Image 1 (spheres, rainbow, N blue to C red):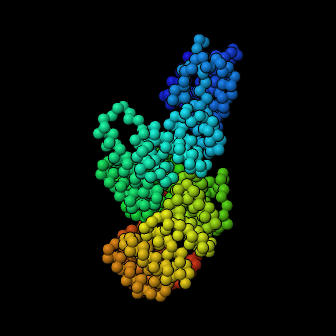
Image 2 (image 1 turned 90 degrees about the vertical axis):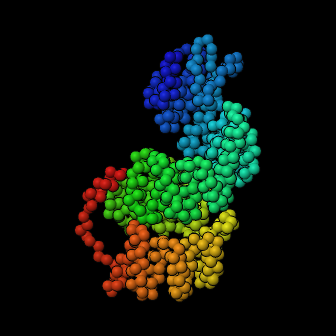
Image 3 (image 1 turned 180 degrees about the vertical axis):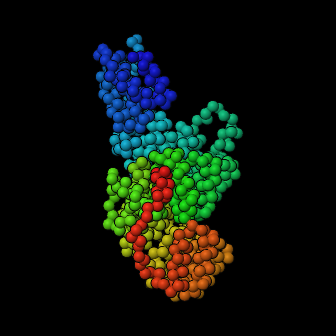
Length: 589
């Protein structure tokens, strides 16, 4: 069977895993003499079969094959294997053994593969046990990176840092290690020392080495800034790197992600669109882009994005989150049909009125699916927390936002936690969380506004809230969130004129639909209906998809006709199905 083993290795190298695993069934079931060479061949065949199963994403079966190979290896006499040491290659496959030369079994490579299978099955404790069984001197770059991830999942940051540093000593361009070490607080100077210890591959000239170190150091500084919540500093460095590397998709996406975190939604959308123009098949952070399109109510672009993502890779967690954003805004009648189909195999129970249940159910289904694919996907936890808040389940939202913070705390998880605590009337917890955000995010207008939001809940704290909002505006004059919150505070205290003056002053500098909507609401509350109508119309001219403006305008028109806008409407009992719409949605799914 030596020729068959060689053929199987060729199939694996070519990525033809289906045929390789079929051939593997013949190899592992073939009989033979019960001698040292036969046992060694059996062990190698099992490893090859495991490689084929892993390539087919049959992780449980691959795990079983690797473990059987380990059992076979224990039957090989140790004294024989020490006579002819021939290492398995970095791919984990060795030349086929022959009758004259017994191939020793590389246990470290197989342990690494067992750990990878456990990790793919989210069995991190078992994966860590396997990796720790490999001596540190025998670990290659891939093993060190894997072990660093596992230590971090188990919250052993000190051991994780040792593994990540070793990765950078072997190769300074392991960007996963750079991001992880920056989040663990490694300084730029310590990073530079690691770069100096890395080997100069290929004997490159000093000039080339210095140029690489220059931009590498700036990239590391950007990562350190963002990890320490200095978003402005990180953004400035990324923009500088864009001058050196124009049309760099990775940097464009990192810029867009930071802009999303700090609330610069329009700029983030623009950069996401630039990245998609350069690489239409990019999937990284596209769930963030989908959420921004939903917030902007740009459903045409959202529909196109979801369609493209399903075509590129329907199994990615980003696709599941984008689908959740898509279904969150769908018409309830259309959602009802598909929810009934999904409910036959998966059910998530909430005591809600029927149609809202089905709309939210589909959204939750896709969020949970994203976390099942990748249980460390931060965006999934944040969106799940926001959805639980909209379902009036702040207790579950707290768990979601805490889950996001355990992975990586950022402004959005702090904002979500504060909202959830306030919904639970836990004002002390909300204030503690907001102050913690202010401590870790120095000179952040968003964090100042978060503390103001907590104080604004009670009438006794409104004066403190006003000071925090004004401080946020002084720190970041273009921060519309603080201006809108301050306007709400003025209205709550009966100072409608001050609210109008504040909003009109901002409108002279920023033509934003949210400012027009807030002005329309203030005018409608003071019975200046024609002024309110003008501002709702202005908001829709800026953003025709703005749902808040549409609903506000509909409510205002009822007021102008003398109809109570809060009066319940009679539902049409003979609801017709939208066949064309259903067909479009079915095609999308």
